[in-house]
Amino acid sequence: MLKDKPVLSNQHGALVMAFVPYLYGIFASHFTLSHLWLGLSWLFLYLCSYPFLSLFSKKNRQKYQKWTLIYGIISLFFALPLLWQQPKILQFLVPFLPLVWVQIHYAKLRNERHLCNDIAGILIFGIVGMASYYLATERYNLAILLHPTLFFIATTLYIKSVARERKNPRYKQLSLLSHLLLGLIYLGYGQIGMTVAYLVGLIRAIVIPKQKWTIKQVGMLEFAVTLVLLVGLACSVVF
Image (cartoon, rainbow, N blue to C red; front, side, top):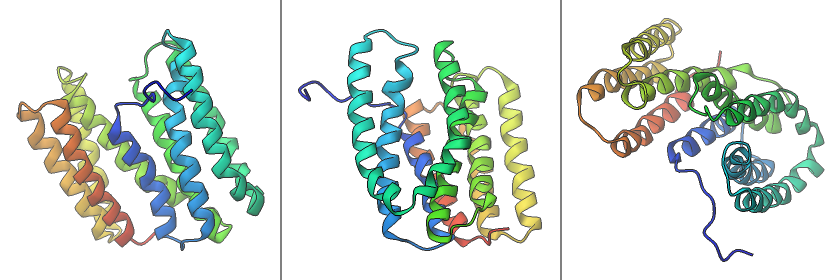
């Protein structure tokens, strides 16, 4: 059954982004054993998302069905202890599922790079972060959703400005404006960690479009920028 190569997305940066809100939820509360089950279940659910959405946009459905099933079963396996301990975590499916529907919609249109689809994915990451926070506190904290989401939207605008939309000056303008304004807002709230993260992001958004970097080089830099964001989130006061 597992003789063929696993189906994996080549968007490795998105996998790192997917776990930032999850880790932020832990930083803002405290680690519990339930976080281990959530993290493992989320990892395989994320891996499941690529073959699942490919069912709506690509051929060779048999291959994608197979790996959707494999990843889905593994994700469910790790989720079972979590659901046994804290069944209330299922409430996060209420905002989660409509966002999945948005992603299915754009997969059917074969327009997965649409900005709205990107934002839907980013919001899904944030909801998982809220679930992570809830596991330890049984409270809701929209800041866990808000802070990574805003940064990742600014990052998405930047990525588009150096990739598929590099000939469209609007994306570069929006990228620079979003990094600058959000950085100033965080500075006004005294959140130095997040201000530094946006400053790093702004410098990158100014300098890199002028370079002839490959997409792989751009992606490698994003690992470092995401690490700066993670440190900024850990250092900042949740408001």
